[in-house]
Amino acid sequence: MPYPSVVVVGEGPVGMTIATLLAQHGVTCTVVDRHSRPYAMPRAVHLDGAAVRVLQQLGIAEDFAAVSRPAGGLRLLDARLRPFVVVERATSPGMHGHPDANLFDQPDLEALLRANLSHHSAVTLRRGAAVTEVRQDGDAVVVTVHDGATGAVERWPTKAVLGCDGAESTVRRAIGARLDELGFAERWFVVDVRSARPIENWGGVDQVCDPRRAATFMHLTGDRYRWEFRMRPDETAEDLARPEHLATLIAAWTGRLAPADWTVLRSAAYTFRAGVTDRWRRGRVILVGDAAHLTPPFIGQGLGLGLGDAHNLAWKLAAVLQGRAGDDLLSSYGDERDAHARDVVRTAVRVGRAMTGGNGALAALRRPAAAALLRVPGVRARAAAALTTRYPAGPWVEETGGRGDLAGTACPQPSVRRGGSSERLDDVLGPGFALLTTGPVGQALRARAHAVGARGITVGTLDDGGTLRAWMRAARTTAVLLRPDRIVMATERG
Image (cartoon, rainbow, N blue to C red; front, top):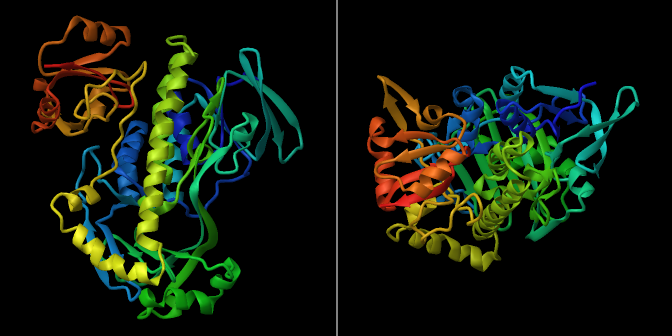
């Protein structure tokens, strides 16, 4: 058999995303998954605008919009479910060209990713096969695959292996990596239901800030809803899933409904953990997604972090495999994503503890303290703002001139008009590097742009309502060199 250039271990959303991105760069992949059929149960339910921007590069942003809905923000509720803080979030497109908070059901997203992946002949999907060993062999990586149906054992030489195989990653163990635990582990009971009648909600997410029974409630899409309840030490998922116990847990929301009105799609216990791998790669064996980091769900970044990993890595790995860059480019993947992942995970831990931690006395203080804080000018806006990325300086991010410098940050994505039609900026820029200019470009930056084959675009030729010009003017910048993942690589200061 012809062996693929890359073996992707894991058919989840992150594995399918990076396989598609690599295929767009002309890299052949085989996606291997130990399950014989797609896992049909809901898991992730939230993506921010930056993550949907990655889906846009795959070509499925509009399809995703049809199976998701923008969320209106976050309410903090006391033990009696009375709101004491409301952080509203616009449902219109944000900085990344998509709403900043989007709720969905993971099987719907996976179906879109799988259908889209089938259009790429460079990708082969192998289900019901488990990767049991990964070892370096000179310039190649040898993958041992066990076929669950036939019992056959195959060994594939390949150029790279991507571990997208989740929290208990086989690939992570193969490279001798471990998770640095970041001080958080709680058991939560997660319930997904389908309701024949609408369950009253305000359009956003509700967080119950009661240390005796912290909980989260959200309307996903259509007739689907989710609850998450922090479990007590003596509780089991089997006990809480009993109809009489479950009805009691969700009665405050479903009290007006008859038991026959709603059906449990899934209930399960999860241990929400916080950790980041101490090693992102060994040679060309690389960790992506939950194999590299785990985060509690309080800021909705679990799957989004993984899609960000894929966006960062795909163009780099393609450049290395196609001889356009050396393996040192792969080092920047871990350097950049490690700093970002640790910041996101620590933020999720802090937010979770602030909303749900403390004893009764501290919880009683939370309501007036949080309400007062969010009346401070600017604090409410920061609470509603999307997370931002700033990668550290390195070979692919120039040294910044200070916090106001754009290097290492993401370029906004307005809708632009060119030639009478409206498009999102990334669709105009194409899949590679781009040089955006509003003024003169120095010889050094022009040379760097030429070396990476950047497409040059004068901002004045795009009607974007002034978004790009204002963004660059605020940083006193006349030109920005964008990487394929839309991170600013270098700038020209005006």
